[in-house]
Length: 249
Image (cartoon, rainbow, N blue to C red; front, top):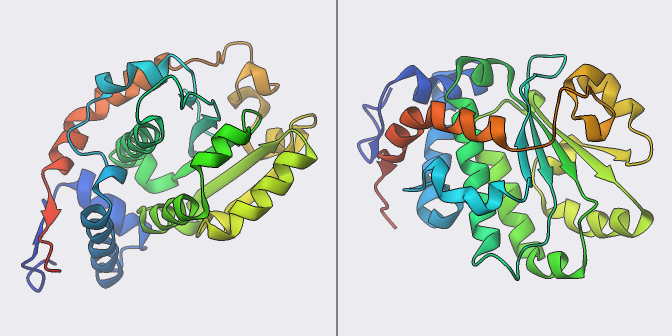
C-alpha cells in the first residue's frame, strides 16, 4: 500500500489503517489519498492536530463541560459528541487552539475504536453560548480551516452528522454567514430550534440524549465519561502521533 509513498511514515495497525479503509469503502487508492490529505493538513496546520497532548492536558476545558461524549450511541450506532459553546477566551490562554486540539483528540480516540470506524460520529453543536466575543475569534478564515479539517477526517460522508441547536434568529443569521466556509459540514448540517428538539429525539433517540436536551435523567451533562474514554484509548492515539509525512515543500 505504501510502496509508492516513501515520504509516508505510518504504521499498519488496524486502529490506524482501519479508519481510512472503512471511510473509503475499502478502496485502497482512495484510502491512500485520504492518508496523504490528512498528513498534508497536519504538516500545514500542526496546531490543529493532536501532537504531544494527553487527555490530562485539558482539565480546564473539561471543567467547562464544553465537550461531552455520551455513553450511548445514536440509533444507527454512531458515537455522540456534544459541542456546547462556552466563551472562555478571556479566562483560558490559547482557548481556541486548545479546543481544536481536544476535538482532534476526541475524534482520533473515537476513530481508533472498531465502532467508531464502522459507524461514525454524530455531533451535536449547541450554539446557545455564541456571543460577540466568540464570533470575534471565529472568523471566515478559521471557519475555512474547520471545514478543511472536517473534509480530511477519515469518516464516510454519510457517517458524519452535525445537529445545530439554534436558540434565536440572531444566532441563525450568524451561522448563515459562517456555514458556507465549513466544507462538508454545510452539507451535513441539520438545524433544530432549542425550544423544540422533537426532531433531534427522532434522529438520535430520546433515551440516548442528555437530560438537558429532553433525554434520560441517567445521562448527566458532564465530561466524566469523556475523560475515561480518552484515557482508555490514549495508547492508540499516542502511537498514531508518532507517524508523519515528510514535508517536501
